[in-house]
Each structure stands twice: as structure tokens, then as C-alpha cells.
Image (cartoon, rainbow, N blue to C red):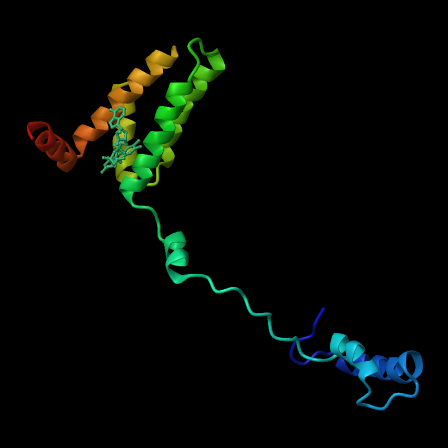
Length: 165
Ligand SMILES: Cc1cc2nc3c(=O)[nH]c(=O)nc-3n(C[C@H](O)[C@H](O)[C@H](O)COP(=O)(O)OP(=O)(O)OC[C@H]3O[C@@H](n4cnc5c(N)ncnc54)[C@H](O)[C@@H]3O)c2cc1C
């Protein structure tokens, strides 16, 4: 391991290096002999600078660090939920029905927008999860998605405007 700064073992290492240099490695070597460089580099010299890293494009890094918007998280979550509902078995086992309910309740607790999560808890209370079959679960999910849609006033207004046009 490279040593950095002052090392309390430096005198010991120097002695070992000198011993190695003159007795074990190259007894005939002078101080500048090239045969001695690897050993000295390993034991005593400061760490060599890190090799140059490939340049990371700034906009990519920023995009990675930026949190998702509420809309992006919402779209991704609804997409996942509707996909799960579309793949839900026609005749789910008791465990699968339980899992579907639990999933929705977990989302209502852990959803990364507190205001949305709190509202969704109320939505679930008023509309208990229906997961008796694929059709049940998909229809229930569309219904609660619409309840959330209606809550987002601007969205309802802009959808209404679209329908009028
Ligand atoms: C559990 C949950 C609670 C949320 N609560 C809030 C909140 O309280 N306040 C808030 O501002 N945002 C909330 N959001 C985010 C919000 O629902 C939207 O995801 C976000 O506003 C982006 O909307 P969007 O118009 O892109 O489409 P989204 O509503 O994200 O829908 C994605 C796509 O699903 C399809 N879709 C739309 N409605 C239905 C439906 N009823 N059935 C089937 N498919 C449909 C459409 O193709 C749409 O483009 C919540 C999201 C989730 C998952």
C-alpha cells in the first residue's frame, strides 16, 4: 500500500530498503541505479498521481444527480402499477391478492411525495383494493387513478379543454 505523508514506520522502511538495496537486490548498485527504483517506489515514495479519468459529460452527470419531478415519479409509478395489474392472474392465489393490497398500501406509505402519499391513503380508505381477479384489479386501479387525476385541478382543467377542442 502506498504511504502518504509522514509515516512512523519510515525509519524502519528506510533501513529495510537500504538493506534490500545493498544486500539482497543489487549489492553493486549506486543510489541512482535503475534496478533499485521499483523497490523504493513501493516502500517510500509518495503515491503517484491518479491516472487521468475519462471525461464525464457535465449534462449527463447533472441529469443523474437531479431528483425526478413529481410528474416523472407519478408517470413511472402509474406505468408500473398498470403493468402489474395487466399481468395480474385471472385467478390469483390468496398470497397474490394479499401482495396486491400490500403493494398499494406500501405505496401510500413510502411514496416520495408526502402530500400525494397522504392523499392516496385517503383514496385507499374510501376505495379498498379490489384484487379478486385481473379484471378487478385493473378496473380498480383505473378508478383510483382517475380519483387522483381529478384531484390535480390543473390537469382536469386542461383535459376538459382538450375534450372541448
Ligand atoms: C399513488 C399516486 C398518487 C399521486 N398523488 C398525486 C397528488 O396528490 N398530487 C399530484 O400533483 N400528483 C400526484 N401524483 C402524480 C400524478 O398522478 C401524475 O402521475 C402526474 O401529475 C403526471 O401526470 P400525467 O398527466 O403525465 O399522467 P399520469 O397520471 O402519470 O398517467 C400516466 C399515463 O397513464 C394513462 N392514464 C391516465 N389516467 C388513467 C386511468 N385512470 N387509467 C388508466 N390509465 C390512465 C395515460 O396514458 C397517462 O399518460 C400521484 C401519483 C401516484 C402514483
